[in-house]
Every structure is written in C-alpha cells, then in structure tokens.
Image (cartoon, one colour):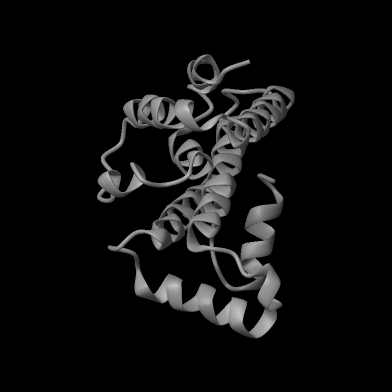
Length: 164
C-alpha cells in the first residue's frame, strides 16, 4: 500500500502518501457517520437518499443510522490499516482486531431489551473524543453506538460489557 498509493495518486495528478489517504478516509467516514443526527451535513444525506431512491429497490432501503454504522466500520478498518502502516501493529493482529469487532457487533444485536440501556451507557462512557451529536447517540441502536465507540485499543473493555 505504501508504494501503490503514490502511484495511483499520480494517475490523477496528485501527490499523496498512504498514510495521508488513510487519514482522509477516516476524516471522510467520520463526516458521513453524522448523517443520522439532526446536525448532519445535508449534502451527505442528500447523496444517500438519491443513491437509495435511484439505485436501491424499495425493500432494501436502509435507515440513516445503518449508513452511519457502515461509515464507522470503514473508519475502524482504515484506522487499523493506518496503525499497521505505522508498524505499530502486525497485519495479522489488525485482522484479529477486526474479527473481534465484528463478533462484538454481532453479539450486541442479540442483547435482550433490559440490558440495552446499560450497555449503551457503558459504551457512551468510553467515547474519548468530543462529538457534537453525543446526546443524540443516547437513543441510537447499540450497533450504531458500538461503531462510534470502538477503537483498536478498547475492544477488551467493550467485550467486558457484552453478556456471554
């Protein structure tokens, strides 16, 4: 990836290194992830709605929180790639962290009703960055809050919240 990114960028007349591309991906997906809150970028919302109305059959249209979750999953993956590019993590370790995140996300889909609020609050307490729409996350599905919260460094802490 370190060699490929500058070559691909040069085809478009750009000078970009792999880590810059990863940072841009993280920034863009963070921006797109705001699509399901009242302060969302209306341009992103409009693009998603246009895509779904013209290219997705009616029974496959997704709510905006699922689009936000998908963007955050991509951000998580890009973060793992960036860490691996910085040689802070072996690719095999990054793969394991990605698998763990997906397992945890799947486990959260099966949490019984009474535990949802407790887990959501636990996840919200783990968010370390300032988010303009933090209050809006309190009513979002667990999967959405999970992808907002998860980082390569807090997987074990999140796993401790999920019932076995």
